[in-house]
Image (cartoon, rainbow, N blue to C red; front, side, top):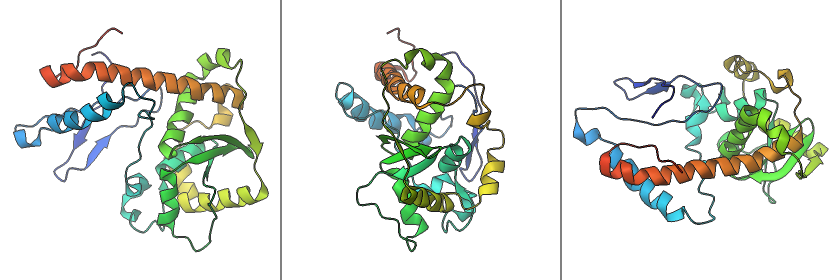
Length: 255
């Protein structure tokens, strides 16, 4: 398989690191090299992927939606990931520098000043809405990773999306004063150190500085385009999986 390679390494404490890919598409394929057969992760991964992928390949389940890991994984700096007293959630930080805010999609949601940071961060694993410039995009995302992938996809594919906005009618509503207050409070929890967040993502070009203007019609078109795109990738992975199980390698299959 051809493509760019980014070295993925780990030290003796099994702390992993990988260079961030800031442009284009990131596809992570993890290969384990070890003389100790007990560390061979392929059988574990294949046994996990097989029922999950093959079982839903022909269903309408949202099997393509990314599933977040533990909230501690996304907190920077890592040594603050137990108290959340300083630092920021890198998913929210990325959305922030691109000009987006998030709002939990729960009918029973009511923000309490006494709510713990951990409980509020748990909201990121559930349905949410995104807002920009005092407007709310009403279609919900199933979690923060879903929303972040959608925004990144929009940025990546924008030049090709302008021709696909015909027929889209996004449901956009003005954010109420109550919602604005709650969004600001959540931001103060998710981004404890706003200056550190913006320095950390200093290489990221804010959307307002892009060569084009943001518009919700194009973003709505991107939502539909992204779903088609990831379903195509899932289909490819399902087709490759038998080769991986049999030959311990993945072959490109022409669809």
